[in-house]
Image (cartoon, rainbow, N blue to C red):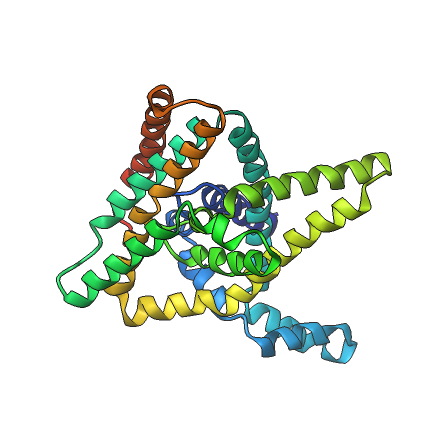
Length: 316
């Protein structure tokens, strides 16, 4: 019973991380710090190596089962599977809900995101030291990268499968970055709306196929391909982007933090651009949309400030 209870706690912590990473501005890495699993998560992720994966797969042969179990434990596989299940459950639920909100109340939704992002940037700015030219250059690069990309990436990059794969690889890096969320990176890349809508449509088609026995196979395969490609990119990201970011934080910690926090500041343009597009399509203006946007932004900022109050002793 004690073991079951412990795994349930890990699953619930995964739910919290997934919910955080599904909305821009709040990081799953921050939640991992709050609930006390950050170091274990980093150790488990960086323990995933091709050699160990091969040993685990070789466990289908009875003679190699003992070695497979040992490799699985070395990667803390049980922890990653249960935590991952919680994260996946929450991400699916939250992104499906967000897609509905983006369709029905886009101004308030993006306003809320703006508040989350702005408050996160302000909170994390206190951890940044810009005392050297190199750190200032890193900060400028981060801000410009996000500011210039936001609002143009979806048009320039499109939603082709290679772009979706790259988005998955980049977004997964947020799992080890307290302060920056995967969904924020997806907004900067112009893929957040598209992927949340695709995931919701895929789940609806899948449920319909299971419950009614009928399905539009071409549409289901097309949607499923996008989801699988994104997840494949995330898996590759675990071996590349996540490790690269971890090394950058270890070797060039302050310059990397300056880049990441400035990236968040630059990303503030993205929600504003998205709202401008929405109200333009409806024939509205910022004069009518601003009160809703600002009220939602205040609510989003309040969420981050409350979290920060309870994580004041945590070093980002």
